[in-house]
Amino acid sequence: MKRFSPGERIEVREVWDGRAWEIRRPLIVEDTPDLLAVYNAPDSPVRTAVGPDGKRLRLPPSEWAMADASIPADRRILGLHPPGSDHSVLLFWDDSWRLLGWYINLEQDRQRNPRGFDFEEHVLDLVVEPDMAAWRWKDEDELAEAVERGLFTPEQAADFRAEGERALEWLLERRPPYDRPWEDWRPPPDWD
Image 1 (tube, rainbow, N blue to C red):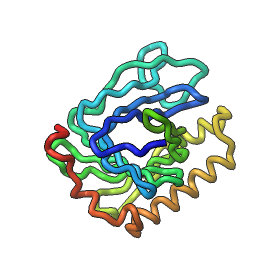
Image 2: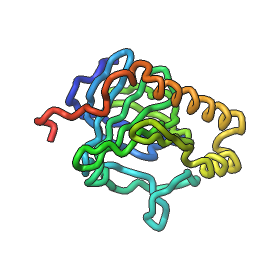
Image 3: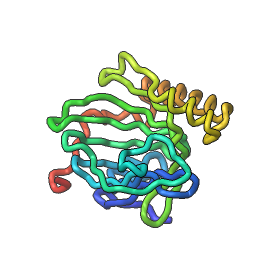
């Protein structure tokens, strides 16, 4: 399948059991054999899974609906995914481009399709401070609930944690593709 060009808008779908759970439409920053980098601008449209009450769901029930949402107006998000890995690293900035932190999203390796990419979220994440001096696990309770509900096995949960530890080491040691000064990245002016 073809590679996408910088500035091209694609579709990134998080799926559960073959069904869309969240759909984003980021812009391609880079699409090479070593890196998929995408940019989600403030107020970019998102479709997300909701329950009967219209509230966003954290873990899938047997049925859900999709609703319109958006990237918060005060957030800029750059996503970095090394093909072949089971994680992505997201950089979050506020509306004045102050780096808020690094976020390691544990997920299935992204599967390319003609419109973009699909992946399965693995629930557990890591939050890393902007200066990388400290970090913490996020959503351990949700992963425990997902295991309890049979969405993942205990062995899969252990594998997710091991991938998180590898990804954190990869990021902290600034190994490629994290060796570039991504903190200083900005979209081209015509992307606004």
